[in-house]
Amino acid sequence: MATVDHGGQDDPESEDEVYEVVDLTEYARRHQWWSTVFGNNSGPIAEKYSVATQLMMGGVTGWCAGYIFQRVGKIAATAVGGGFLLLQIANHSGYVQVDWKKVEKDVNKAKKHLKKKSNKAAPEINTFIEEATDFIKRNIVLSSGFVGGFFLGLAS
Image (tube, rainbow, N blue to C red; front, top):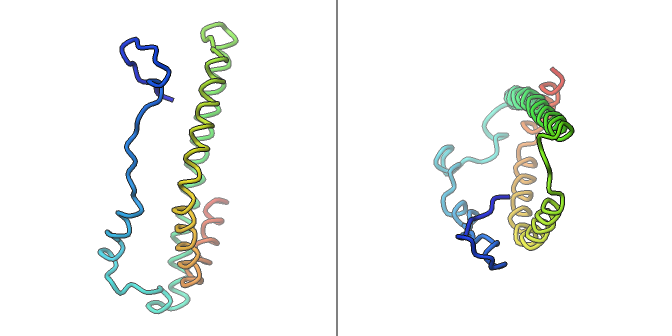
């Protein structure tokens, strides 16, 4: 968590940073990029392609996504694990000293901040889930191919 230097002021309220909140959901409703890319009459894919084509398209894109997800996941796990290992070695050797009181204070502050903000994000998340569910229902063959390809990509 980043802190801002306020020129040596010890005012407790100056610790909280002020952020401007941008409502991206309203912008996304007004500027739907998929209408520009796919045209205004871009209905379900089931109306445009055969079942075999949909399965193939979904399977190939799913396999690619699964393969990339697997590779990136391994790299991320290695980086996080290696960084944690190096930090533990440095701590054990005396190169790093951790102020656990400050860590606890910052974690509690972050928890309070997240609790305040979590209630505001729920409507946008529910809207996204409803739209995704509607897309999957309209394009069930493509979605099935994607899921199968994704799992094959993870396994390869």
